[in-house]
Image (cartoon, rainbow, N blue to C red):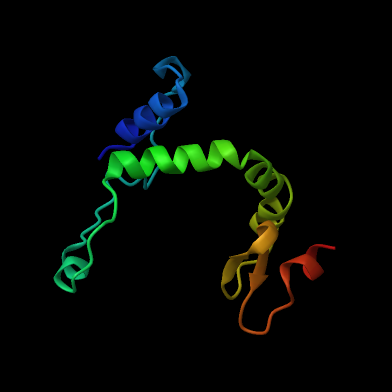
Length: 112
C-alpha cells in the first residue's frame, strides 16, 4: 500500500477531503517502499484478527476518542525524547510516560 493510499484512508475515516494533502519533494534517501512480509508469522499460525480497513477504522477512532492522551504526549514527553541523546531503548508506560531501559535515568527524571 502506498503512503498516499494510507493517507486517503485516514482522511476518509475522519470525514476529511484530500485537499488537506500537501505534496512535498522527496528527501534524499527517501524510502520508495516499505516491504513487510508476514509469511514467517503466518507459517507459525499467526493471522490478523481484523482486516486492514477495519483496523485502520478502529485506530483512527481510538485516537479521536483519546485526543487528550496523544496531545499531552506530543506536547511534552515526545519532544523531550527527540531532543535527548539516543541511548538504550524506551517503552511507553501508563499515563503516556516513557521509561528508558538498561539502567539509564528515567525519562521524567532526565527532563524535570
